[in-house]
Length: 526
Image (cartoon, rainbow, N blue to C red):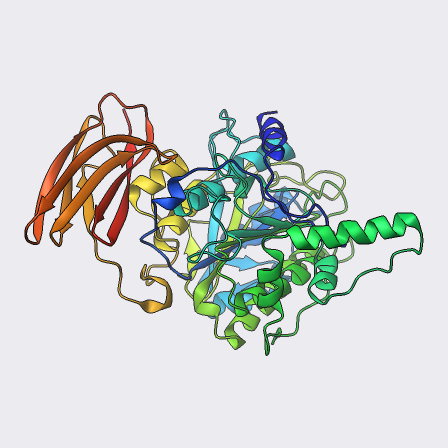
């Protein structure tokens, strides 16, 4: 209910984007802020995250198979169990294997390019598709109703004030690109949708290739042509997307399978290769709600679920190969998730019912390959109510990607994730260097402690001359002037800031010295 209310309220403040360009739907909503005039993110990396949603609730036990407990696994689901001799072996382990349809992911895993996260979930799981999806997209607790997404909160901190002031010189491109018929909760920020939505990959290709369906030679046709023309003229991001996609020499270099997921990933790879600075790509494909006829009775390694997994594995492998041939594979990490898993015991309809935890896959050249966690424990006599309990909170994966890949500091993590989660080695060798490998900007201001309960001490460095330090809120409104002095020589010093009476939330210390300026996020907690 809160999510629908949020979308309804933000729709009234849509910026000038076309509702429809020949079936290509791009949306961006939001309220303005003046903070973007003050804040420049210190962390301008070229790291990109691609999120793949496996909608419907994937059967984890028939995806990542516990070979060390095969007899219990088979007894629990003898009518759908994968034959042991058909399970794909993984390098370095004899305890775990993959569904035979996942040859593409197996190849990447054996090459050190895939991390399998066992039994990802959360306490007290919800088995409703809609509610469980919202929990995963918002990174909330089961009993919390949050109307913005974890990726949207990250983008909101990195690019305050969006969409006002954007495109800008430092960020001329969409912050996020999502495929689907509606806006994903994942990329909704506290006040704004933080990206654009491509409703149909096929119509997108018509758009970038200047292909339009002919309009009828009637007054209605003339009005349609006029609407298309006005839509294109009002589009903020269409030209940069089109330019990136069609930049001379830009083309997919790998052969992709013909399916809806691959069609989305082909576009993502080409946009990345075209130089688009977009940080988050979200793609989606459904079909994992396998209550019945999950497998073929004559060969359980085939059937509906195997077809879905083959689409995933083959498409991801083609995407990675494409990025590698483009020399862009070091810039991208991909992640899969499904809103829940399935029960341990199969049902009489050769399917599985809604369950709890399920595996996640992280993939890409920067990923730390291997397996996080142990195989789920399968009871010797599983009942229809037995579930796989979660080992790894899915929000630990989000938090680890935000910190280790998207280079967020601790106050930012707390603001984005609401609480602290254990860090997992998802990409241990990655350095959070600015875009293009340049030297990191000079740190002019820092503070401790952070988060803050009552007060914090700010360390600053000035080259001399007029020096200004202010405390501002998330909308850029000045709360107080901490310091305003003229120094006759370069100086380092400290300044105490009292925040005891402020409301909980994110604030910023704004520091300016001549032409140099910097913002520092500060989290107020109790």
